[in-house]
Image 1 (cartoon, rainbow, N blue to C red):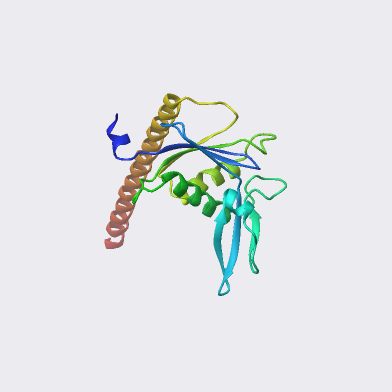
Image 2: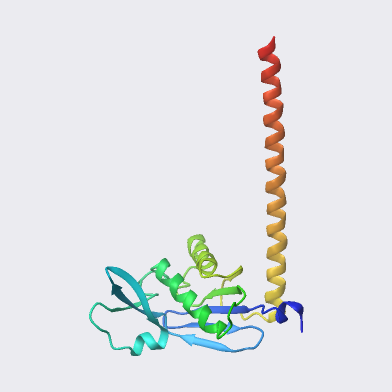
Length: 195
């Protein structure tokens, strides 16, 4: 068993359909499948998250409560970003079980509905930001319906880290170049101002 697994590394695949979200632990194979539904309530004029998933579907609503689907939009899968983020936080806590301090998971996001014409850059960014906002430490967004093995997912994360490292080092070298140019320009201005 790897050190990462011993420390509680969680690697999940989240597949999103209009009527259900399936969270699969890629190490154990365990699956949590829940409808993307929440019950919201009113507490002293503030909207509060009351229940989610199957519990939200079966709950008898009291005064001031309403049942809302996270995927209730005719054109896109995620219509309410903040609500979807709260729902995903709930789903990740459910998957963590009784762990007192669960490690932030790595999350593979795969949208399975509303794929006509492919996902736009905005939709891809929504999936990524949704996972990060819900507490994922690393996110991989997969397009299409392909099934990836654990090895393919691990390789994709490694490739993504390499690409991020190249972008970060490129950004640092760009900043260093700007600082050097600014210092050179300041020196030129001082020298010309002194004449």
